[in-house]
Length: 254
Length: 256
Image 1 (tube, rainbow over the protein chains, first blue to last red):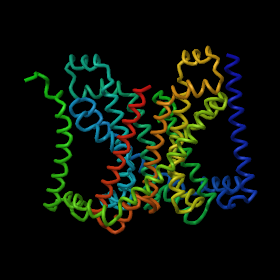
Image 2: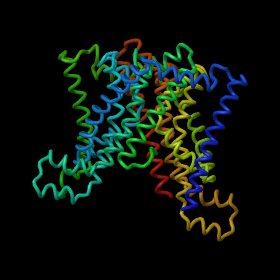
Image 3: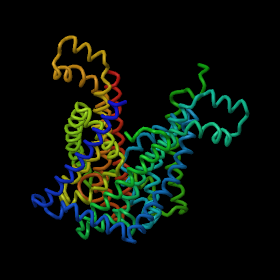
Image 4: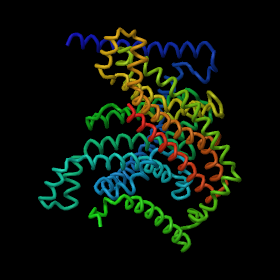
């Protein structure tokens, strides 16, 4: 116990040392002028930009626009993904017929579908939601299908022997048994839908965090861009670890 | 009659899959020809098919493919070299690993591709930005899987090495590294997948480079059939890459 406690405190100390030395190195680099000063701004400027961001009503409006787009895309892409995953995982024939397409389409760069989504859903939030939903669909469908195949067959036979209806099978047997895969799918789906929505916002949008990042870029407001990226990364990592903890999953590891 | 159930027949799933795809395309063709779906939004699948030849000849797809492949190759080289080296370094220093591994895992979950405006400022609107985005996004899985692979070396193998009085360097190169290689390859493959996705994505977003740019250009010209054909081409290239790398990974895992 004592050795473990010592190890934990040494790890904490090392983490603090790494953070402190990184910040010091950054500040020294910013002050040295070795790189363009605007590209590596002082930490004080970034902290000031963070404070400014926190007090900026526009930031919250854009944050909520992105949050709504991600939430709706997760709901649409996630629910379609779960339905397709249940279908493919529940039927061997359907799984073998259509799962390879989803498996190989899954890792393709979804952002190239953005022009198509603009044609279909316009330049407003619809096309961003569609991008997030497409991104989210693939991991959720694949993980649900794989999870379905791993359900203990005894549970399914018990459900059938009680003559459970399809709805009862889904709600009483499949969903409880699929808790871990579903949460894992949700975690991965969330990550990729955030990327889909934010990238779409950087390409063509007039609101959202992606739009704000591009605004900082076009105005060459580097501290503002660093502050925004810090906020976006922190939020994405926080939600990810929250979903992982909810499902008792391991820390994200692809 | 073999008596085997229909669902077990090997040809049936492939036929059903291809049949489903062909039926969906035929339905789309019909709906567009009946003007139930506007052809100004969705082009006829037959037009898209014809456009393949046009984009290959007129848009110089081969050189664009080579540009993307070159960027992917450069990012792959960096991911493999630096990712594996960092993984080995973290594995060797237990305290550092305990401190940093969860950070690397956190980075793997972060939308790293969103750094592209920052990289545009640092490196400019050129291939280096695209390669660096590919490199950064592919790095976390390569590091994590290298650490995992090296940590998973069976103790009995290490004991055998020690019983032969191998030096630490020999122990690493003769036992640990070869036994971890399949898992390291999984990490490198995942890294390459993320790299390729982000490379094509950033090419599209900044309208520079290879395959991603062609989609953007055709969309800006409102060449719908050409744009759909280019998207199909990008998908085809990605699928071929993932299929080949997956086969290689399976072969490596079997060989180990």
